[in-house]
Amino acid sequence: MTNVIKYQGYTARIEFDAEDEVFVGHVLGIADRISFHGESVAELTDAFHVAVDHYLEDCRATGREPLKPASGRVLLRIPPEVHAAASIAAQASGKSLNQWAADAIARAAAENSLHPDH
Image (cartoon, rainbow, N blue to C red; front, side, top):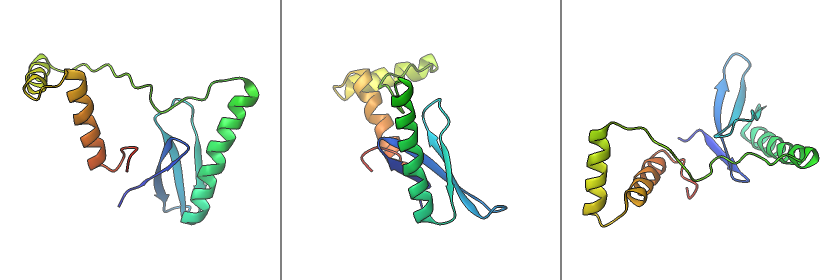
């Protein structure tokens, strides 16, 4: 079972608050805090849509650019031996290290049902 929902390019993680008996969601991958809640899946989904729409409208009204979950650029710091092994694997597969790493990250995200195509 996945605990994420998606809308307008934004992904939110859902948790259940047993004390208040309500589903709580938080948008992932942006610095701005967007959260919402609902007592049913339908109410939670509607609240998510309203929260994202409100965020986008607030950005328009204040002249701010809405934050996006990702820019497409990633800087990684990994041990030199991992870097070397990845470079060799990329060369062996006929890919650049960038493309090889992008493919590996996409596979890992898909395994967790978080890839945008799932």
